[in-house]
Image 1: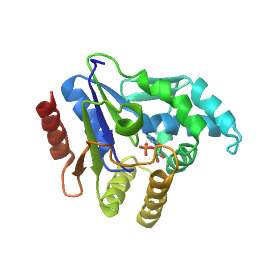
Image 2: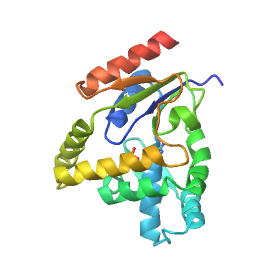
Image 3: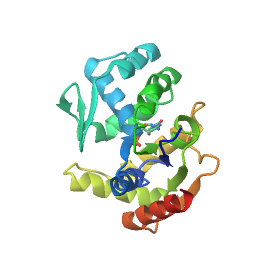
Image 4: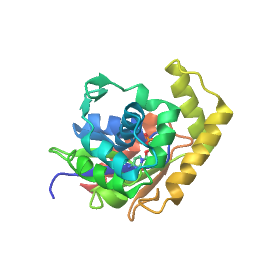
Amino acid sequence: SLIPVIAIDGPTASGKGTVAHKVALRLGFHYLDSGALYRLTALSALRRETDLADEHALAKVAEHMQVNFDGAEILLANDNVSAAIRAEEVGNLASKIAALPAVRQALFAVQLGFRRAPGLVADGRDMGTVIFPHAKLKVFLTASTEARAQRRYKQLIDKGISANMEDLLSDLKARDDRDTHRAIAPLAPAEGAHILDTSNMTAEQAIEEVLSLYARRV
Ligand code: C5P
């Protein structure tokens, strides 16, 4: 269809969230943080004390949760959960339930709904492979495990959340492993994706690079 999509995929803490959000602002496009949907499902399941072994029940949670991305804030049933969904515990559970086909199916339509004029920048693991395979531009953003752990560490400390580098490294590796090796929608560069290693780039440089790739595509 005519509404352009920029798909930005990559591993945890690769900087894709910052890059995608800023690219969207620069272009005046909408922004989808698809990881937040998995995190919201996880948080909602924890709060409702859903049986975490019940795939069907988790899919129901994903389907029926009242989500509102209101500017910079993310609301779950009118409760501002922007900070709560970033907790490591929630991220880890998100990555576990993201392996469940029924949960991914439930979130499929939700994600398509974010494609609105004049355009969308979507970030996640399967934006270019599964959700928006016809995206105008696909970028696979990566960085070394160490660079990503350092970024995550700084993010948490800046937010006043205590963090431990060794725990972060092992969490990152576990989550990468789960995201890369799951049977459904595994993390992998989409066909035609531009691979961008940001280990030695600032966020600003990565943003400029994506904007210039997009300018050359249209
Ligand atoms: O990107 P973020 O770390 O917020 O995503 C949380 C988890 O949600 C990831 O570890 C991944 O397992 C899952 N996810 C996914 N598909 C997406 C986005 C996130 O499976 N498109």
